[in-house]
Image (cartoon, rainbow over all chains, first blue to last red):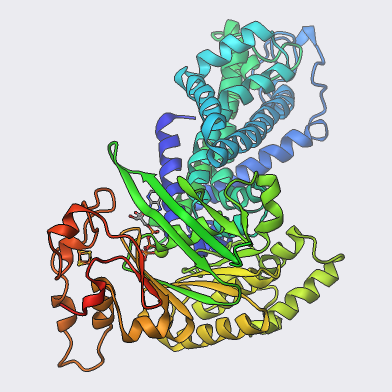
Length: 304
Length: 321
Ligand SMILES: Nc1ncnc2c1ncn2[C@@H]1O[C@H](COP(=O)(O)OP(=O)(O)OP(=O)(O)O)[C@@H](O)[C@H]1O
Ligand code: SF4
Ligand SMILES: [Mg+2]
């Protein structure tokens, strides 16, 4: 995720905690209002849902198999039989795009979720315990954040080797630090809040306080982070696959499709354009939705 | 056995402040609280009342000194050994808006102590117990599944009190429990606290900056200035015959309903309050004390008995300046 965006999330989250800790129950109502007012976010939401459905229902939507070769019909331009043409192996591009959506979406959602969980737990532990725990966790996070995320991902993928599991792992390792930082600063504030003190004086154990009082109050922030981490993960995976460091053939991911299509850019440009447009569509949709949620999070927007 | 429920011995709490400075939030405070009494704690904003209250129930650890509960030094205990005493001590907060988790229902809020200490078996038993507690603090039972933001300040404070008494503590620190509330509900809450005290055999440390409230509730009163005790003793005795110049000032400054007399209150104290990060030498009150002499600047007066009341002033016997 971009530094500027992270700052924005951090600020909005802080303001939210300061201004309306007694009113957070209303997040749901605010979401409803966003749904009414922010058309871009709503459209994006539906685009995402449709893409997800398409990915899940891929085998039902196309008559071809994912890896079905047809060497007689290589590099055919879009036609009625092959809406998006065929590739160098005569495989239907639309079919591969739909199956690739499974990988790309999975790769967006799974590491975003994993890094969210890892980052939230570590960030909350750092903020709540302080001292050595805090120092160690945050030093590691700072080091992680000091590298450009693409570079870091390349280094990790290079040393681990390709494959979908390693992509998950890499994207999680790249993204958790963002989440940890923001959750830590939220936890620091929440920890000194009276309702947390009230739990402590009641004798509630630390772990339960984190689980019951601190993390639930970070949920709106986590939702925003989740939505914004997904496109970041998709982009990183696409770049990795494009560089040959990510998903390995014959599996299709959108980044990988661009990578192989690149060689035929002049005679079969659809091989690159189709997956490129798909990546743009999904990344933009998630970003628009994330920005909409960010507005909801930021109490300054509530006034209007 | 000391015979006191709670005792502070030379308790000091320093907070790190800007630069290398330390805020002397509480300095060398010793006091005793008897079982069943209410000790009022009075002083201006920032003098360390909340800090002292939190030190007594081990929400904060003292920088030096010790706190004893039923004669046992709880400052020295490990966290795991302290747990059995945790249940005995509770806190009622000043701000009923901030002290209830906004995401929990009343049922879960009040059930939290019961579940934490496993005082009831099944879920139904816990809920029954919660109902009982809500009845005890006069919150209608049908509100069981509402959220804090659906209540008024007074009702929220009642819920906070229900939480505080849920695990049957013996000692409760009430940290300005009514100062955030409308005047109209302040009395109801004060009466509730007083009734609970008798029915549940509680002991209170009652923090307030409102002297009339303290007079109404407290058996003894402790006046603080800048982290130190100025005067401590029987409430009526201190209210009728204050020994310390600061106590005298506070009593004179109690807001007068008659507008023609108002305004006098401020005239009495000169200058800004000194900073707790940089307290004056000698008596801490001397920069604002109408009686201050060189002796006051040279050394700090100790608390000493003057006719049953303890005061920390060299001229405590001599009456108003
Ligand atoms: N956690 C903390 N860190 C640093 N300084 C603190 C902390 N808590 C309190 N202080 C400082 O200690 C001093 C005493 O604060 P405390 O809250 O005990 O005062 P108080 O008498 O309760 O005031 P009030 O009537 O405003 O509640 C203040 O100067 C305050 O700024
Ligand atoms: S010791 Fe001196 S300065 Fe302090 S209160 Fe008494 S008279 Fe005032
Ligand atoms: Mg206070």
